[in-house]
Image 1 (cartoon, rainbow, N blue to C red):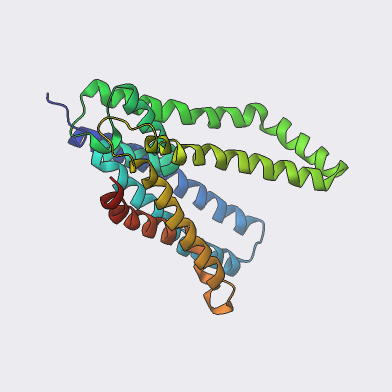
Image 2: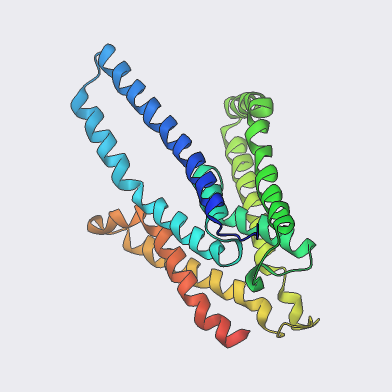
Length: 250
């Protein structure tokens, strides 16, 4: 049987796993509704909460769909669909896939086809790596939370600084990935133009500028709703800007 990243068997397997996750969500939603009735919660508020949550789920869902489309060119639809439907994000999945692909001497944006072994390698890297966060939380989460609570009780200012420092550290890791190819300006790489390393930087700058503009617009009471759609809007416009930026700098 010839392997293909969009083989029907992969769609069937992915569809089954996504269906299981959806079934779990429905199961716990039903259990929660029954429990809310047992303890006498206001059902009008419950229904309003469900409706509000459903509406505001559209915003992050747009980002997920865009992420699936972005990765599908090289990896096919089933794998990005599975990864981003269960646990994952574009920032992580793209980096993990790029690392796995580059280790095999390929480039994520320039893959025409993958062998079964290459596909399995990429899938393992994308899947196993993110599992660290899943098992690490029950192992150290309680101790970390207890430590942060104790620090906050002793010195709220330093606790806030510590939390911000951890967040900035996480962001810095992704920024490093954005700026890592700028060295092509003074150390050209065969097959790439000297200015190609500026493409992710300029794309990020456009997204950041869009986010700033949306933040300013959100100050107006009538435009506060933009806060729920700021991420997908900046993501879409950033990706759209990447097309002319790539044509200009590549």
